[in-house]
Image (cartoon, rainbow, N blue to C red):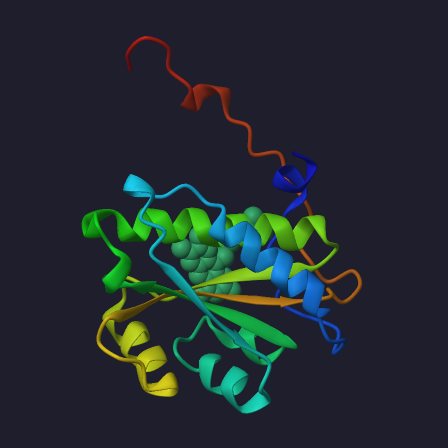
Length: 168
Ligand SMILES: Cc1cc2nc3c(=O)[nH]c(=O)nc-3n(C[C@H](O)[C@H](O)[C@H](O)COP(=O)(O)O)c2cc1C
């Protein structure tokens, strides 16, 4: 559980490559997420090509960390796997969060770059990879070894006043 409380968004990375076994572990963590009716609608594009990372960094004003990372994973929903399509965004959120937590546990930094449901961002990712119509870009997770000292620190977010018992 430590990684859950220690995770912070990292947006500035060392140039070092992320080892293949760590990438595989992060993908495995994503695929272990809960999903509605266990539909597991996810697919992934692992990106370490600088040109693609640069292109991904331009899909929104906030996606720039993709160009600072040695790699990113584009998380997609595949309509062909969806038996409960209305829940696809919840499924892919759980998947993305699992990947962030796994990256933290492996000593890596990561940040969730939002794509869905913003249509322009989804279209931009579709265009970059020439994706077929059944594939819906959901998020981008930029990953790498964090640079020293530049990152947010864990903050106490516990707010007892947000908790209600047996009614509001
Ligand atoms: C749905 C979603 C979309 C996000 N999109 C972006 C983004 O486009 N660019 C970015 O730098 N961070 C993005 N973030 C990261 C948030 O800014 C970050 O989680 C938040 O500021 C809290 O900081 P922490 O992750 O360090 O706890 C996104 C997070 C979520 C959950």
